[in-house]
Amino acid sequence: MIKAFLKRYFEPQFIRFVLVAMLNTAFGLFVNYLFLFIFEHLLKLNHAYIVSNFIATIVSILFNFKTYGILVFKNKNNKLILRFLAVTTFTYLLNIGGIALLEHLGSHNNYLNLTIMAVPVGLLNYVLNSIFVYKKKARFFNFKRNKQTKE
Image (cartoon, rainbow, N blue to C red; front, side):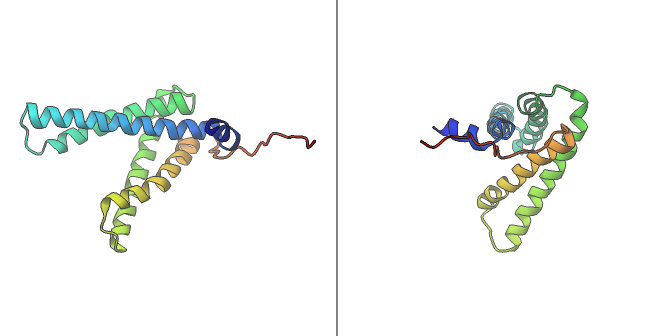
């Protein structure tokens, strides 16, 4: 029932983007946790979160580039990496700015602020990657309705 609803009202590319975004988030957290464990517990490194986050960010950006390119936009062109990095950097800065703005407006719960910013930044990320990186139209909704005859 949910699958039928999604297929009927949302573009397949947008659905793939949302699913791949969830995969990428899980992968990024896994890599970050793995390196945090290695640097903090095995190597006893001070401020291990800085190194683990740096490595996880680089690995995640490369992983995201490949998964969005192949699974969402059906594109394997590695020459698009600089455009992808530009979009990623722009949306990262916008996200940080939005979180800072929410804090300035009185919301001092960074978990809530991060959650609030995730939706508009994620949608903007989809639009910018569609248009600027992969040169495709950013479609969200499928307005093709099945014509049913009334009996």
